[in-house]
Length: 449
Image (cartoon, rainbow, N blue to C red; front, side):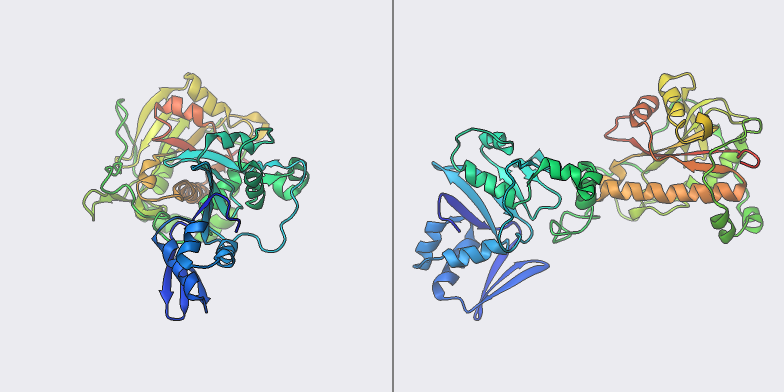
């Protein structure tokens, strides 16, 4: 640990417990025992436990050289190190994992910021992160932002900053990143989404991860029922579930018979009654309950984390017997369709045309079911994993639609993509409140198709 101008602190969430046998560093579930420490080093640890301190302050408290102890702590990732110059904080290395051990790999002469590194601003300022790193780097002095790329700026500690970037895994040879399949195949958003929505070194407690209900007491929970669109609803017939229980094919049959249908029979399109049955069987609300004041939970035929049920179905109709073309919202609580936009609407036309790459010969769907997510229903409860939870719900709802459609003799085909901007325009929603997260095509399959 170089003395220089640095200020040290135990990393976020960590504490040091002094025991008769020495000390224990705790950051659950991680811990490290430090036994047989001389009295001076224990005094230095007590000083660190009280808050940030310079190397000189720790040495004074210990009455001896504490460099070996600090090197040991830094090597295991227990120290947050703030580099300073002229009484000013420049940047801080914030470990949450264990630094690489052994001799460092030489920095390539062409090294620049990795394509996976992300600089963003949070409540405390600028922070540089990398999904595969063991640390973050908090940048206090904005001049150091220029050093994220090769630069001739003669800033104090510039060489040390680049060395810390390299040690943290923030730098890479751009040619090597493009030549290796493993790094080229991952995009920055995909890798970030993967790492930030799963457990790992960044998540050591459940304090800010998972179903924390962080918004409770700060914001009201978004209601279970979406406010209705102004047009008069179209009531839908309700199927006889008892009769369906007796007549439906078996679960094994629908699982084995399910296919993705890409060719549909426009001469015999899906009927309004069939669409109503499909919606009822897959997405109707079976009731809303308020077991806790200020919280509404829902029951539907498919599973949903926390019973929040944020997904809304929007049938985009091109060819349905008994129903005018256009875009509708399925009111799962009333089992009714509410008209939203006409088929001639540019946004609705865009949604329909976006399916051409999914269907055979660039055909257009009889019905496109767009899955909208009222994200606040999930984000009110879940931290970090909320969007991942939404996509899991998309998967189970799509499979529910697939199986129900198969049981009804209908065809279905999930889309791997959609036009969320067109959905926002067509549905007239704020994308931060509701966005499209999936879509599935349904209709009458072409005989022999």
